Every structure is written in structure tokens, then in C-alpha cells.
Image: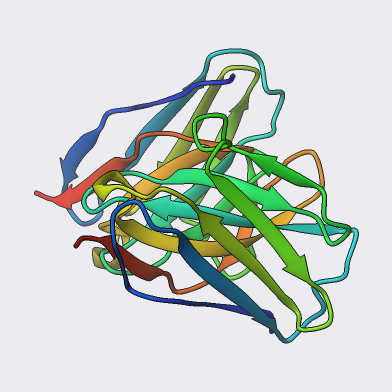
Length: 121
Length: 103
């Protein structure tokens, strides 16, 4: 059974870079059937897609975050990562990683449990 | 960019009720629409993909319909464990969510 687990600092200072890693277990990240994505949820608010990466490294980012976001993949470690630069309090959120089917319907399943990142000095 | 608009934003219902949530796309998306359930403190869970296909393990009281721009998630015989927030999604766009509360 495929599982995803987010890891990284829970507290980041304003203007610094948020870095998270998603470790995939129970299956290979090197597949053309699926892509891999990051989604976040500010406290008490809805879901916001951040970006997606394929096993070959092709990336797709939310237009409003594109200038600050980098997603990378390490197939040797079965991991993919998120970096968000120049963070502010508005980047405080629970960050989820998830598998995204590469078919036209493009659904996210499964999801990691999520990790809360707080931006504060 | 495609916008997804859910309605209502919240509703209250009794156990045993039939509940309907609507999602409207700003342009036609065929049947490329998915539904998720999220409980407090938990990750979203896929319920329906491709507008009407039930994800494995999801109870049959959940159903989805629609195509083009208008979609519906229906829960028949609402159970206590169904009180949650529901989101529709098309690619990188989520609806704003519908919170289903106990009446």
C-alpha cells in the first residue's frame, strides 16, 4: 500500500525559505502513470494546489506561487521536495504531499498526513 | 484558469437525510471532476473520481454525477461519520469547500 510522509521544519522565519520533503513508501516514484504534488491549507481555510512534478522532473506550478516555488524529485531516494522562498505569515499552513494520476481526470490519492509549517520570528 | 464554485458553503442535516452538494466549473471540463472528504485534523480523502466513479472502499451512499460545467455529490442516508467538509477538484483548482454539520 502506497504511503507518503512529509518531513521538515515546523517553524520558519519570515523572509527565509521553507523546505519540505515527501518520502514515498510501498511503491516507486519512478512511474509514468503518476505525478507527485504539493497542496497546502491555511488554518481554517480551503485547499490550495502548489505544484506538481513528474518522475522525469517536469514541473507545473500555481501561477500565484510560481516565482517563489521549486519542486524537485530524487528517484534514488523515492522522495520529492518543496521549497518556498521569501515566506511570510500568509505561507503558514498545513502542507500535504500527494500522488496525482497522470490521466486526464487527474485526482490526488493517496495523501500524506500533512505537516504544519508556521512562519513566525 | 478554470474556477470551481461550490454551493452551499455549509449546510446542516440530520442523520438519515439525503444531502446534495453542487460544484460548477467556469468552463466545460467534461467529466474531469473529483470529490474529496476532509475531517478535522486529517488529510483529504478521495471519494469520487471522473465525476461518478466511486473510489475503492468508499460506501455506496456516496454518488457523483454531472458533466460539462455542473456536477453534484450526493450522500444518501447520511451517517454520523459523514459530517465533514467536502471539496471538488479539477487539476490544480479546488472548490472552496462545503461543510456538512449535524442538525
